[in-house]
Length: 82
Image (cartoon, rainbow, N blue to C red; front, top):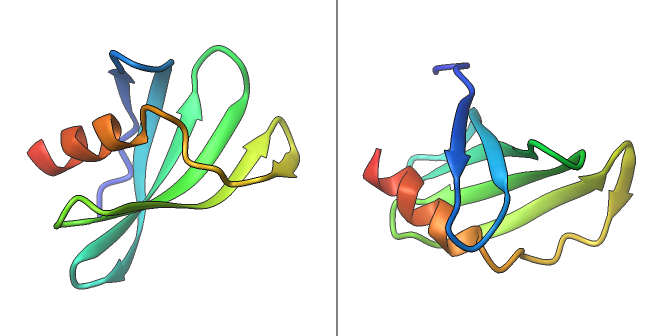
């Protein structure tokens, strides 16, 4: 598994760093997504079908509600394309 962090500029959201951190099952990977400018961070599961789910979210060091950001599906489509 690659531990390379990739910076991604999203049309509908912030510039984020993305790293593939785990395999959930044969069709789903877990990614860590860090907002470059403001310290927010998410662990997101993305399946090969394009389904995505926020597993955990942080604002700084504080765990917060894991609601899906508006730009999450754009990130999922980029992850599937790479």
